[in-house]
Image (cartoon, rainbow, N blue to C red):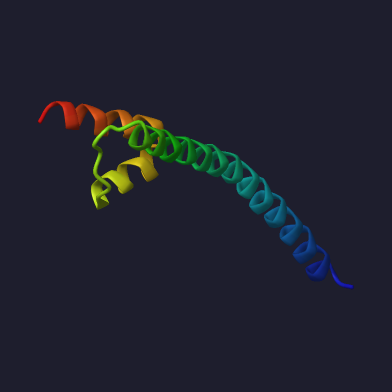
Amino acid sequence: MGIETISAYIIMFIVAIIIISFMIKNAKSFSVIAINSTLGGTLFAILKILGMELEISILNICLIGLLGIPGVFIILIMKFMQ
């Protein structure tokens, strides 16, 4: 093996470490977003079961999916301001 091959292996090892660390950091933030969205959807379903007249629309689904629990509060504020 020449110096070029060894240096290529070292560079690929460093790149792999950087990519793996980036993926781990993003997995943590993705799990937080997924949990928040799930809790928001659950809260929306509980409020719907309890009798609040909340409509299921594309806007509501997007707000809950992107924001989670704060999205449900935004939907409630919009409903009571009508």
